[in-house]
Length: 152
Image 1 (cartoon, rainbow, N blue to C red):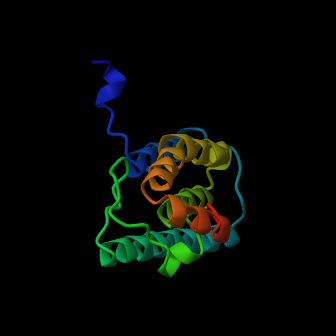
Image 2: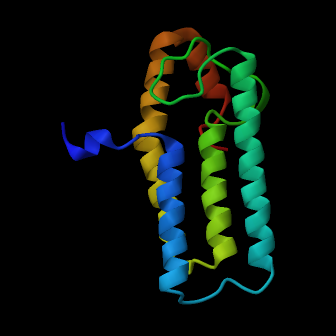
């Protein structure tokens, strides 16, 4: 067993790592500022929106009695509620939270973490999840994929 195999491969863990890196950058390598007030306000709004988005998605998945835990096989394809707007609202919420905290902390150099985090989510979670859904619900998935965007 490799050391990497013991890493808990869940989006909240990846988010926590990205947040820790952003916090470390703002604490130990402060370079610039986004601005006095607008970045704090926008950052707070993004964090709040990300939390609400993720909560709505979890609520909708629980309502349909299917899992929201990555790497598990879902019992149902959820296409209602927030899932009618985005195929991956929990991951979108995570990205909004990271972006909001980077703005709030004035962690200018940490902006590079946003596309890196999205790339990790795409490779580790979104693509495998969509393959499972396509395999498990082939006809429904084709319609859903055409109708609903992956992120926004």
